Amino acid sequence: MSLPVALSCGEPAGIGPELAEAAWKTLGTDLPFFWIGDPAHLPGQVPHVVLDDPAQAVARCAEGLPVWPIEMPGPRVPGAPQADHAAGVIRAIEEGVRLVQSGAASALCTLPIHKQALAEGAGFSFPGHTEFLAHLAGAEEVVMMLASDRLRVVPVTIHIAIADVPAALTPDLLDRRIRITHQALVTQFGIAKPRLAVAGLNPHAGEGGRMGTEDAALIAPVLDRLRAEGMDLRGPLPADTMFHERARAGYDAAICMYHDQALIPIKTLDFDEGVNVTLGLPFVRTSPDHGTAFDIAGKGLANPSSTLAALRMAARLA
Image (cartoon, rainbow, N blue to C red; front, side, top):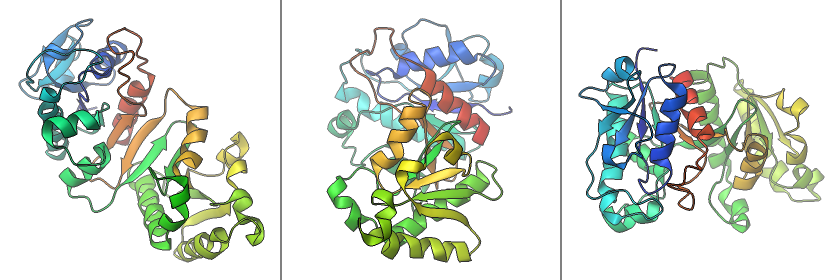
């Protein structure tokens, strides 16, 4: 691997600094990466080296956790986010994007942020990490994929109430989500002819209209049109039979209509190793699929499995 992966610090008061050290302790020289953040916020359970150039991370990762420094005011207090750190957290994300776009890093992996702290401390107005990254990269539209070695899922609608899903689910939105997912499977995952399984909205995919009309009236025509363009699409399928082992062997990713329809199966199969992958960016971005975990920050209880999986997937996709 010629270029390291950039790992932005996320919320300093959360488990991010601990995860960075744990990841280096496990990966060492096997997967060079550098952490972007304030060295003073690291727990100090492992050595670290401050870089003058991100390219040094490959050669110096044997010495300790490589750090691309971002100064922030005041110490880290585990479990207690500070508004004064907000500007530095945002700058760490911006630096990660800059470095990966300039070719100094192969991919960007982001540790979890705390949106309230960023809003209070720096006027952060984006709904989350993903939208901010899209803004920085100038991407018109991005798609959230949750991925592991067992399953890849893409929710068409995400953080909205279940009552709002039918109105939000439009043919145009479904079309765009499928196209972006298909393209990313080809360009980032190296799957020449992706196979996509598309869930229905209603139980039993509507059961001929007896349990809802959206599956036949909205979803099916979109799939028919995309099949005519050459895409390998199955569906709309009953979601309750899409995720057992034999079914998963028949597709490369599942397109789901709403948040829980996508996230319940992958979190059941791979709770600790699921990875958030942002599709539609001009670079590879991954993130562990969990939050800041303030309740266990600083207690040595953080499980690095998802961070390790996110770093490994970032390197693999890059």
